[in-house]
Image (cartoon, rainbow, N blue to C red; front, side):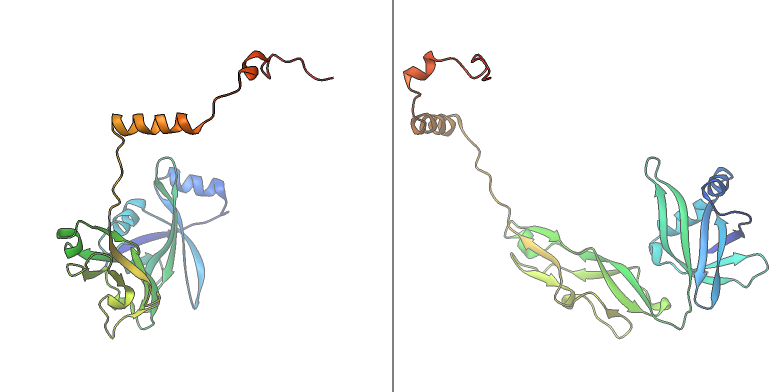
Length: 227
């Protein structure tokens, strides 16, 4: 069963003070919009929205929005704002969804397994691209795209073209875009007392000694200012 978000229409002025009053009452201001409908200013329960955002499908979750006196609408969260200090939700944008029309969404890429380049060659797996943009029908939106990387050797690159493809989704991210690769760890040279001593000695030898006459003169700070 889809999640249900109950939305209460907002009345009066839509300014900062009105938004503060909505939040003070325990809700957050939101806007529901979509093709064929006028935007509707509503308020919703932040706990319900947080539950959706932290679910497996996250912001790609399709749920029902119920507004009193109106038919339930299929919707998705397309934008949200958080208060930076306490990280509280302060505003939500909801978009009406038609189940028979394709959508453009960003989906997380999940790497599975340990690459051979990490196991046997001492490399490190570096994920370059964590999300890809796809186009598909709402019912076909995956919660994430899984890809097995166990065969990835040192310096090998996994590209979007190497992700699972099907007739249900179309990748909008460039096929040659790198998703992950196995890289080599650079060894850092740790200075020992001997090497440090040698470096210091070389540095001293490389810098010529100051002429004795320079030591007898006044420093810049001691010299009288030019008039």
